[in-house]
Length: 216
Image (cartoon, rainbow, N blue to C red; front, side):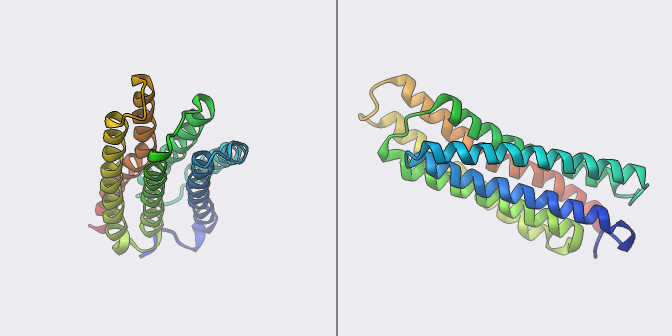
């Protein structure tokens, strides 16, 4: 069952565009960090700027959706849940931008023996975000599918925790990293990347409540 009717097509279109922005941010985040890990700093910085621009575009869409929902008195029964979901999804974009920003500012040295783990962690975190977007789309268009996608988010978040733990153990047990401060730096950035999956899980916890309310 779809949440929107023909009368609310404009808002539905805006929400679709907003979800597309989240997907674009997630894909750029993955590509940007892979460029960073491969030493392609200029390409990384270019993608970071694209993420920054997409975040601004997403913010404008979010404000337009909020305005239209209240100004046009649309879907009064579900308006609060829709706005809550949009606001929480915005946190995912914020995390992606902040993590990319931390890389741009701090320029951590990623040792070769940790590179594959960082890449894997990034890929997994982005998979969690992509499944979250699918869950959000299902909330608006096919409520019966929401939990299927939410379960996949939980799966990828758990996988991210596993890779994060492995990466941190390698960093602190390796003799290749001589300075303790560098080991801490590796731990910090592993946690930051994993935070993207954590945030996706957090949004899903709220989304599951919204879905239950719509189903009863």
